Image (cartoon, rainbow, N blue to C red):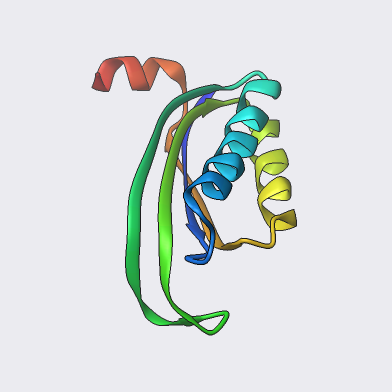
Length: 104
């Protein structure tokens, strides 16, 4: 399993309840695909450098998780389906569990 991070830019027009429902959907994908959610870090509403879908603000959320290689493709597929997600970026933080344990 690899340690991964996904940064998600969500529409500012969503209510807190709708945002939580979206985040629950994303975290349930990680659990369902035999991954382990490490952290859900809500950065909050931020100004954007340029308009995205005619919006100048967006809500940022960082998801950190342990994942087998197939999980990332499924998570990104689910994110692409969501209309309220403007952009996302997934990066690999560590190649294996052993590297994560050495850092911690």
